[in-house]
Length: 174
Image 1 (cartoon, rainbow, N blue to C red):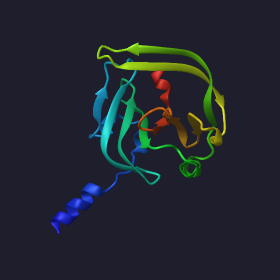
Image 2 (spheres, rainbow, N blue to C red):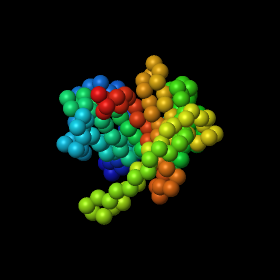
Image 3 (tube, rainbow, N blue to C red):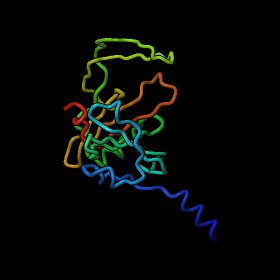
Image 4 (cartoon, rainbow, N blue to C red):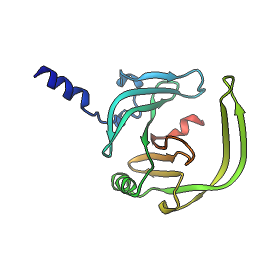
């Protein structure tokens, strides 16, 4: 009987703590600091565990705080590609998005190599509004339920994911 209860405890999923936005990071004692000094205006924390969002299991969440450790954003990475069914679930939960964006014109492409020899390619481009059928790269909600940004990974990436960030990221640019 004890083994069965232990197994059930390990496989339970936790709700994502969206109500922690605006609170001190100390309200989430299991949050682990991942980056601080490399980020001039923010701290990055993570929480590992079993979470669920719209029926999808998630292995962990990322939290962005300002330098005073007030939680500003909660981000989740969902494996795979965003499909119409999941998009409709998001619309049901958060309303119609403010806008959907896709790449318009490429402005600049640059490549760099770090000290370990890892190559990175950065592409800067303008964005234009689009529809869901035009495969948006960014979807934005900004309503009475808060700010939400959904960004897609590039198609050439080996492991496709999309990231959903809840909260206002403007603290990064102030």
